[in-house]
Length: 140
Image 1 (cartoon, helix red, strand yellow):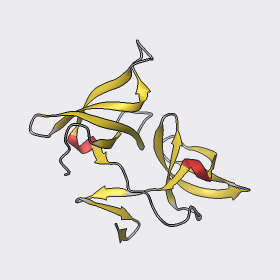
Image 2 (tube, one colour; image 1 turned 45 degrees about the vertical axis):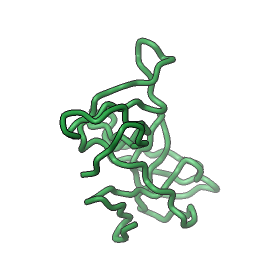
Image 3 (cartoon, helix red, strand yellow; image 1 turned 60 degrees about the horizontal axis):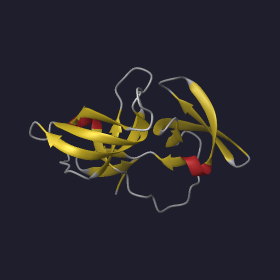
Image 4 (cartoon, rainbow, N blue to C red; image 1 turned 180 degrees about the vertical axis):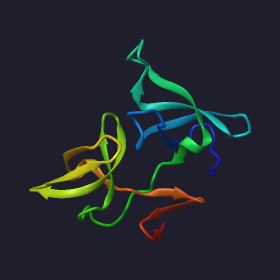
């Protein structure tokens, strides 16, 4: 598990129903409880009571990962490629199910939705495992 410090840019995943498979950009406000918890401030999420203030939460260390590196290969996707689609202020994990013109159709298993996205809102899905980014069977 990675250790983060105040000011680090990260992504926090949600384990709440309806938000599974989503990652939100945030920054570390403070490590807590020997780095088992982190105070984070989200980049795109705001407080319900005051929508001008960024949402601040305490999250478990297993819900935090570094921001994925920019992938240098072209943004060409193939049937059943795992991707992240930027929607509703976060990155959602899905699979490519088709292409229509310049848009790709993405199926989200957690919600059973299939939505078309322009390539500018898609990225190849990377997993953070044992301190390394993994794409399919490759390591960055």
